[in-house]
Image 1 (cartoon, helix red, strand yellow):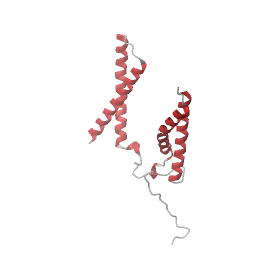
Image 2 (tube, one colour):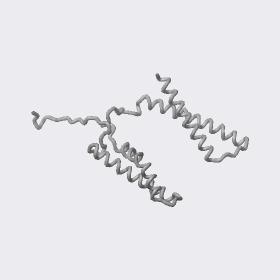
Image 3 (cartoon, one colour):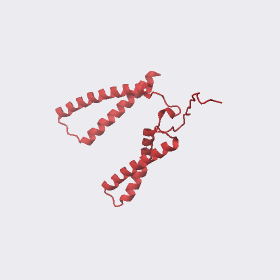
Image 4 (cartoon, one colour):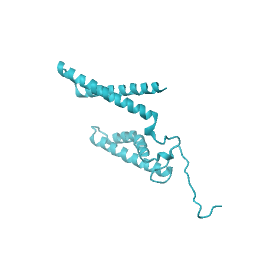
Length: 160
């Protein structure tokens, strides 16, 4: 039996889905996440239905909102969850080895994009090559993703 002068320490057990950072348990986190997801999905669905050239904007709204709802709900969860209540969560993720690999791969890929983009721009201007902007953007983005992915995998395999 404890007297009123003895401080008690309460600890919350970590759970798979965590608890809300604004207080409350999983139910509050779930409700807030679903509310954010529904608002975002409804807004994006409304935008699609408003600007899409379709005979049935209601069906377009329903399909887009249904497709966006799970992702938007998880975005709400990621915003509202308290990381310290997640089972197995890294305490300081920015100090993890994966974060170091990510930073090295991103900085290396950025340098490669500047180098290849600059050389390509000079080459295109000297040879007077005209290319559609969308094609050039797709090639640059594809190169950046491929370069980053290769560099990340290389960093990971070098560490093992």
